[in-house]
Each structure stands twice: as structure tokens, then as C-alpha cells.
Image 1 (cartoon, rainbow, N blue to C red):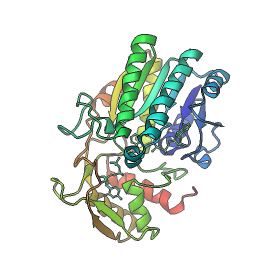
Image 2 (cartoon, rainbow, N blue to C red):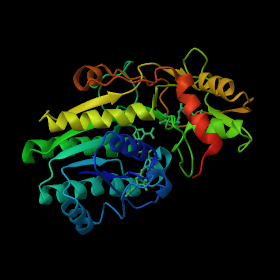
Image 3 (cartoon, rainbow, N blue to C red):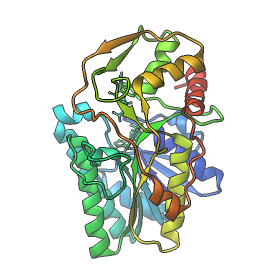
Image 4 (cartoon, rainbow, N blue to C red):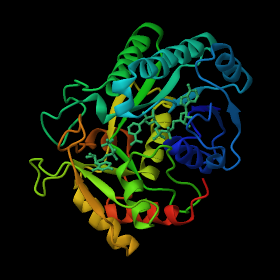
Length: 323
Ligand code: NAD
Ligand code: UDP
């Protein structure tokens, strides 16, 4: 049995669907602070907090869990700067609690949602896993601290982990059953598509004076189904007694904010009103992954290599979203 923390959130719910479709048994632990019951499509939900040690131990025992996939965290970079306590508590202290509950219950396999935010400002692109890690905000710091904790727990307690450093998660279930729903929404793609639908007056471009070809930031948008698949491959790796590893997950291709807006306009067939706004602090100009390690070692092969296709899945969801 696989325990998925934060499984009612955006990335977690897509992973849960994928994992169930390949026949695995999954139970979700989510406090629904940001998650959606509807996103689970009937998967068993324990509504509770991962900071509740007794509850976590009980769930691990009751469901005979052998592997934990840990998505639960707060992920608003700006808020992590203004309220770091909230982030260190919920992302670091809660992860320690979870890992110690796992030790107590004898559960030794862990898949972790890490982030390209652990790298900080890029020294080179594409960024591989050997790129120096100097996070530039408390959110990135919390993910980096968790990675350090995982290494220490592996060395001391033989707890094996795979830490997946996602670049920009994007898109929705190609079948249109579930999709991205953050409240508040801060991610570029859903904001643009909501503007295309007329639900927002416009979308702001944060910075037009970067040293990139069109002056706007470049990011690597990886489809949510490809992220989901990587988690399943990570579990297979751990179940083969594979060693603890860190993997980047990205398409290895970058797109600027203006390119994303133009593609969204093409896919939706709607004009998208834009407002040129100042830079958002803490945004590096260009983040693009090298995912060579995940491809070579996990056999990961992302299917959505064309951003237009990724946007099409998000647009499909945006038009008929139910939560
Ligand atoms: P999300 O907010 O949609 O999902 C997080 C889920 O965790 C929510 O359902 C929330 O209710 C739950 N949760 C939070 N704290 C909890 C707690 N203490 N106990 C129980 N449940 C709790 O976020 P997401 O975009 O799906 O991100 C999932 C993970 O991936 C996070 O760890 C995030 O830091 C990481 N990540 C996301 C991206 C991205 O592009 N979205 C990129 C890199 C890393
Ligand atoms: N962005 C933007 N306008 C918005 C939201 C985001 O121009 O309303 C830019 C942001 O500066 C970044 C890119 O879009 O360069 C992706 O931002 P997002 O918040 O989606 O993801 P992040 O890269 O911060 O994880």
C-alpha cells in the first residue's frame, strides 16, 4: 500500500490517478487546506494533518503501508518570504514528523516532492542535479533542508528515498477528469487561460527587461502526467532496492512568458489582454532542466514534449472544471 500525503492537491491527485490506473493500492492523507475531495475520484481519503504524529502512525499501521509519496507542503514562494514560520513548520517540521512516524512503523521507502527552487539563481542552463543548491527564498530552503534530512536518515536509518526536483508543473489529465485548481492561483498557465475565458481582465507579465530573447522569463513546463509517471518509476526503483537518488524532472526546453501567452491564444482561439508589470522579486531569468539522469536511470520518457499539447490539456480542463 502506498500512502500519498497531499494527494488531493494538483500534482498529488494526478499521481494518484496514474498509480491507481496501473493497479496499485493507494490511500491519501490530506487536510484539504488546499486540496479538493473531488480531485480524488473515489480514492480513499483520510482527512487529517501530517503534523498529527499519532494519526500518521495509525494510518501507516492500519493500511500496511510500505512506501510514502510526500506531496503535502505549502508552495507559495512570496508567502514564504513574508511568513517563513508557516513554511518551516509545515514543510520541514511536518516532514520530520512523517519520517519519524515511518521509522516507528518500520516503513523505509520515501518519494519526495522537491523543486528546482532548491537551486536558486542558475549558474548554467540546462541545470543538472550537480548544479549548486543555493535557494533564494524560504520555500526553496525548506525543500533543500528536507533533502539534507533525507540524506542523513538514509545514512543513519537506511531509509531509502527518491527526491524529484520538478521544474514548472503544467497541464491537466488528458482525459479531462481532473486538473489544476489552486486558490489563490499564482501560476502563469491557469492565469492566462482564465483571462482567455474572460474570468480575469488580463494577465500580467512580470518583467520585460530580462536578458532573454524577448525580455521575459524562460521556464521549463513539464506535463503533470509525465510528472505522475516519474513517481511510479521512482517507486519501482526503490522496490528494486535502488539507492537513494535525486532527479530533475523537466522537458529540457524553455519557453518565455510571451511564448506561453501566444500559445495559449492559439490553443484557445481567444485574444489574451496583457499588462506589462515590473519583475516579481526572486524570479531567475531562465530555468531549464537537464533530465538526462531520470531518463537514463529510471527509464523516464516524457510524452508531452510540445508545450502546445500540454496547454491543450489545461484549456480542456479550464473550460469544464468542476472544482
Ligand atoms: P497543492 O497545494 O495543490 O497540493 C498540496 C496538498 O497538500 C494540498 O492538497 C494540501 O491540502 C495538502 N497539505 C498541505 N499541508 C498539509 C498538511 N500539513 N497535512 C496534510 N495535507 C497537507 O500543491 P501542488 O502544486 O500539487 O504541489 C505539490 C508538491 O509539489 C508540493 O510539495 C510543492 O512544493 C511541490 N512542487 C510543486 C511545483 C509546481 O509547479 N506546482 C513545482 C515544484 C515542487
Ligand atoms: N508570471 C507572470 N505573470 C503571472 C504569473 C507568473 O509573468 O501572473 C511569470 C513568472 O514571473 C515566471 C513564470 O511566469 O517567470 C512562471 O511563473 P509561475 O508562478 O507559474 O511558476 P514559478 O516559475 O514561479 O514556479
